Amino acid sequence: EVQLVQSGAEVKQPGESLKISCKASGYIFINNWIAWVRQMPGKGLEWMGIIYPADSETRYSPSFQGQVTISVDKSINTAYLHWSSLKASDSAVYYCARRPAGYYYYMDVWGKGTTVTVSS
Amino acid sequence: QSALTQPPSASGSPGHSVTISCTGTTSDIGDYNYVSWYQHHPGQAPKLLIFEVSKRPSGVPDRFSGSKSGNTASLTVSGLQAEDEADYYCSSYAGINNPFLFGTGTKVTVL
Image 1 (spheres, each protein chain N blue to C red):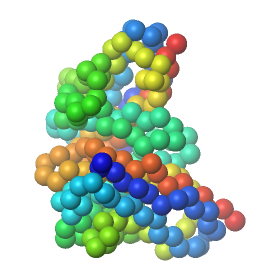
Image 2 (image 1 turned 135 degrees about the vertical axis):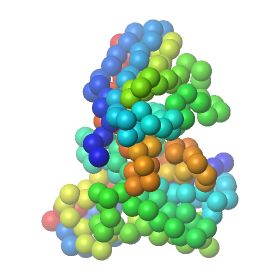
Image 3 (image 1 turned 30 degrees about the vertical axis):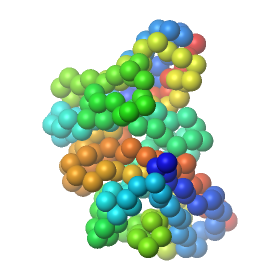
Image 4 (image 1 turned 90 degrees about the vertical axis):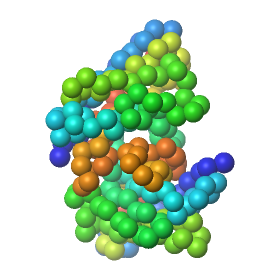
């Protein structure tokens, strides 16, 4: 079964760092892009960025460039989303999703989301 | 770039149909046939319903159909069922810096 399993909910204070994960299984990890999508409380979906595990090519939405870092560890089929200094406005649910390689602009497999709460 | 515009809500009775619009511009929906639709039950993973305007992934019932005219895409859910009550999002390619421009989302209620 193709699936993306995300790490558990996090509660952090402003200024702390955080790395959440997304572990893929059931398909060839390196041949498909992994995207990250944010959903703030009561709001819609926002694309944050995407990484190609085979060569770690990464692209960010202009809205998130410099705010987060996307990375991957091919040896364990896992993608990461990292903050170096969290803000209260980073409180949201974060989804990872698979985008097939090639000229395909959709996400066909999604994780269940990681809830991040940033509060003092 | 602003989110694609969807109506906040839509509703229909069981067995009936509901159509959700998704309005963009000539820089996104109007210029590319890369429109996709997602169903999202709160607390669950979003699910791909439609890709490339009107194609359905395997396993998605043919009650779900997509179309596009000009700068507006549409999702029609026919034969509404209770489990169709969810949030629905469209998405369009809008250039290399914004390959996934999402819509504002529509909450569908089955009356």
